[in-house]
Image: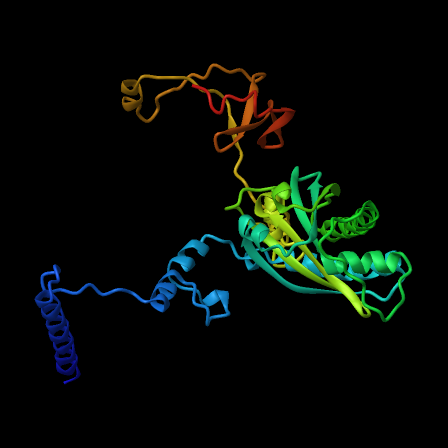
Length: 359
């Protein structure tokens, strides 16, 4: 019943469109009785995935979702969150010693972003620090916003507590401001190195300080990167630090960052390895003493009968080879012990020198 109703509605809509087209044709229209349907702006935004009413980026759809689908989520690198938590604890202590003030550091979020999109989203003015990971032979980016810059300058130059830092916009940063920010960045980079130490020793070295994002391009715009936003509060002053690490920089330690916990081993079980090794020592094997080997025609072998004699090219003093399967292990001389035949081992056969069975 519902299908019939839907078909009736669809037929009515087509009839209305045809009537509108016929009126347009009567008025001199050239569309032959068919009127093209034009999308409005809301439908275009929904198709492209730029819906202004949706604040959650995870719910984007359309072309925007297809474009962003190639980004790798940081949640696939579980140890990164452990590293950044360690960084927050270390920075709180280091910045307190650096500023002689009560400093609280918090981690806002960790996200994945394209490098070009991040450069375009940096609120200016800001200072962009380019640093190098020595052992990984790649670069990273540390962005200090203007509020944090003025707060650091104010607290290091003896500003009063309880008063917000004075901001003078529209002028370039002075040499004093750049030097003070560079000192703070050096402290942060040392803490970042300490945070990665339990995972992989690395030294982050200050490279240069830029104020123009175009001069801080350390990766291609389409390359994915990890972005960690840190909030620093110093009573009534404070600001933000944003740490950006391209995936290319983290590639040398990617296997370590995939761990669910510190020291996890992939594809190996040390307990099972130890148990297997201990059991191997108690394994029984079959040893074969080979007196001689020679080649005979198959016709002669077929003609063997009970009582046929086989002459070996060996003497009582000949060297006897002892094998485990086809692998030669030892050589020795044959003798007698009581009523049994014994072999005294003279030397061990080297695997590289063995032929694996003669003919």
